[in-house]
Length: 97
Image 1 (cartoon, rainbow, N blue to C red):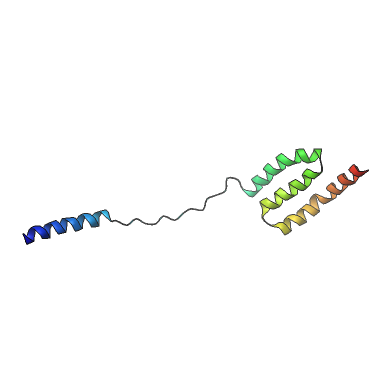
Image 2 (cartoon, rainbow, N blue to C red):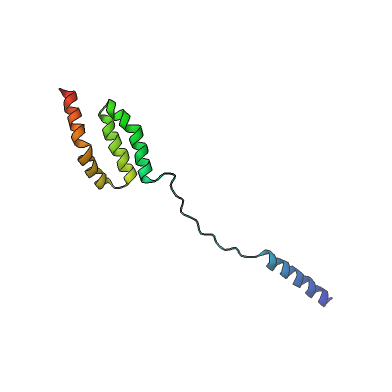
């Protein structure tokens, strides 16, 4: 009887050990964005620039969208002032006259 119980116990332990194998944890890969920053900028330009030709307020929308994409508000402000502010000022003054 002891041998029978010992054999049953051995079989049960072996089956438990065989089922309890440990798997390696898989490292999660960093999910890449669907578009790069430059591609997002190109999309913003292609959508907003035709509207900016119609009304000057879309120039501001363009600057805000680029600032959100770049994630650096200070640099985006300087770029906006350098590239868009002069033309924006001309268009606003032209509309006022």
